[in-house]
Length: 249
Ligand code: PXP
View: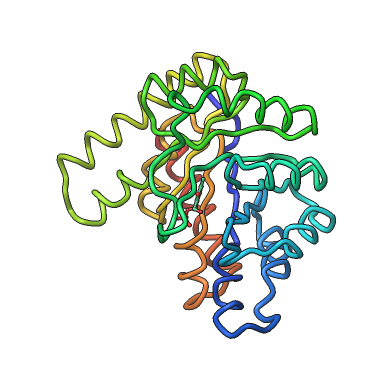
């Protein structure tokens, strides 16, 4: 069983709002500091190839200013690995990236791409980054993550969250079981298990009951909720939901 379940707050969509007008506000780094003050255990930011939200200057400021761990989400490209080697974030989470997608769709194909990923993981580890692989909660990618020496996997919760939101109860049950089984398998291999994508108060509360998860990374829902109740309250309520779920598990 993991110790206290950590909450990583993804601040990408503060930058999405900023970029809608092209100026400097709202500042995602200010949001990161405020999230930390409100109880976030870490900050996640995804520097996409097309820079649609977080930009290089944001990532550089996050890497130097933050008082809590920075999780740098990135595609396994030469450009991003070189940047991580320079910025040395606490963690580097490798995700698949397609230019035309609205958000990250599906987990990283670690089985098909292991030859390309192996040296990139070594480079990130040598730079002192805790490498995390964003993958589907299936046996083959989890076993490959272990083989590649990744200390962390982040299991993709998007399919489950969509099934819950759409009221597809049978699919939701099956997806939850897949996540729980994947988390237990990864933990049995000595890998730290994170989860992320599409989580809200209800799904975070439910998933927190699975003892093998050590960290959730949550962005879009929290930023949307912050519009109505403020960032501090949204993070406080998420913390409470996760604590309730863990206590019930
Ligand atoms: N974890 C990973 C690896 C992601 O790619 C994302 C989306 O950028 C998240 C967590 C956060 O997902 P959401 O914004 O849906 O909470």
